[in-house]
Length: 218
Ligand SMILES: Nc1nc2c(ncn2[C@@H]2O[C@H](COP(=O)(O)OP(=O)(O)O)[C@@H](O)[C@H]2O)c(=O)[nH]1
Ligand SMILES: [Mg+2]
Image (cartoon, rainbow, N blue to C red):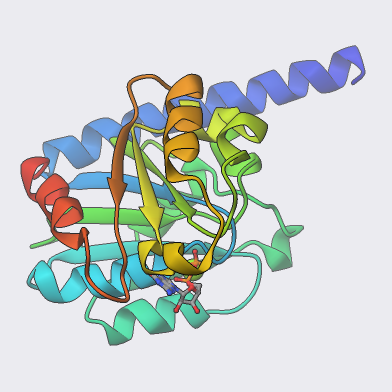
């Protein structure tokens, strides 16, 4: 990267960080617990939200990030979650969300009565980890189909997140995944990471996720 490009990038990250800090504080003041869900495409972010809604009595809001389509916003809205979709496609197709976009989206969402706000970030394990969106907690999802090595290959996403949700545990009998190795790789890159293992399909382990949400209610 040229020297000037580095300077511009540093400035973008500084501005992003400042707005992120502002959001973190504003939402805490409003009594809203704000989480940023990150994962590869298809790990089960939207499904997790759809299955969370019925257990949390309709006080959830989600900002959906995708390059194209409003499909995820439609899915979560159907589950009773207040949803707002950001599409980056018309603006260059960025593969992550930034704090200023979340701030702009929040100007369109009435948070009265909302206890939990989620960002469903754009599906990939690289770019979203580099941009703080101001969440109180980053949540990293990895499904049992993705392999044990992903924490080692994409360490930043695991390092910037406090909680790892391992999804699709119902599929374990059909896979060759070594769960102990996956857990130990997660802790190799982030020794303090909390892990919740669940299946949205069977409901196994789902209560641990709901407990985590309840414990963190502001
Ligand atoms: N077997 C199984 N499939 C799941 C589970 N969670 C999600 N899926 C499926 O995985 C696919 C991708 O899920 P989605 O929530 O759209 O992933 P996202 O791209 O991370 O939002 C869908 O076909 C879901 O039905 C689970 O716990 N078990
Ligand atoms: Mg999704």
